[in-house]
Image (cartoon, rainbow, N blue to C red; front, side, top):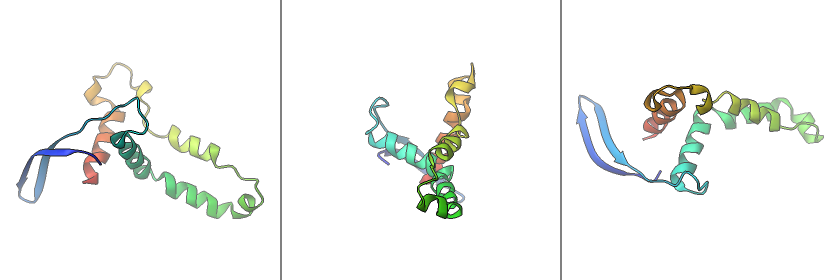
Amino acid sequence: MPYTIVHREEEDGHVWAVATATCHLDHTEDALVQATVALVRKSYGETEILEDAAAVMATEIAEGMFDTTHLLAAIRMGMPDPAAEGDKPPALTTYRSQSAEMVAKER
């Protein structure tokens, strides 16, 4: 993930860091946007769920009868929805805090 650590502290086995990163949210090819999206999908187990579905539905898939589009849509429906956060202060919204926590745990 493209970032720069500007300050780091360690104490009693804990590590804190301040990092900076820039991205262009309107550009889906932006490295930080791609890394964050991939991390959130990984954290929600999207690949594993699709693999499990493929294993269970092997015959249907082989016969071209099983479409994972609906399963993928259902997985993504379970992810935090920024529009459902209402008037919460931005720093307290579920979609921001969960995503930030996932990114923080990655390093």
